Length: 231
Image 1 (tube, rainbow, N blue to C red):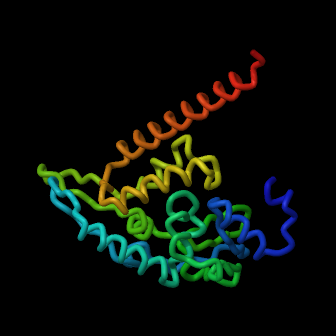
Image 2 (cartoon, helix red, strand yellow; image 1 turned 180 degrees about the horizontal axis):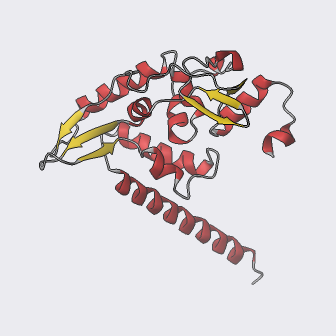
């Protein structure tokens, strides 16, 4: 509806608006019948932060390595796919990727190597998207090997996709509240106070931020009503 009201004149305008909103989107091509993709999910596409021991606590050197790998990937040819992912992934991408790389067109979709596809009504729709390992790298995910040897947990510098997209903060676009929260975490990075958390703890932290934000807004409303009441 928002894009319809804007009456975008071109495909480029639509992509630019989606980018500005921080909304997730995909660029797809459709082919008649079934066209098999040669995409191999086992093929390694990027570096990762690796597996760490159970008592692992990252230090400033680990953080620097993560930030270097993040920037290197986002500046790679596949990095611009992060702009389409929405949420925190897209916001991190916008820290690095210039607007000039937004010329995402259908000709960029190669059905032979497309990571995503689905079939319906005799046609197959293909699209490129980040792989799981690429998304893990962007969000700074470490695998932690538990001492029992049979379990593995995941911790990250940023909330993994599920924690964000299943939260109240996900309103379909990158809202001012999202940006305020994002800047809070960025400041922790700058102050060397950032920590890695598992998804459950990230989800709790997002809920806590939302609750504090709602309380502050309610207080602002009460104060405004009080000040506008005649004495």
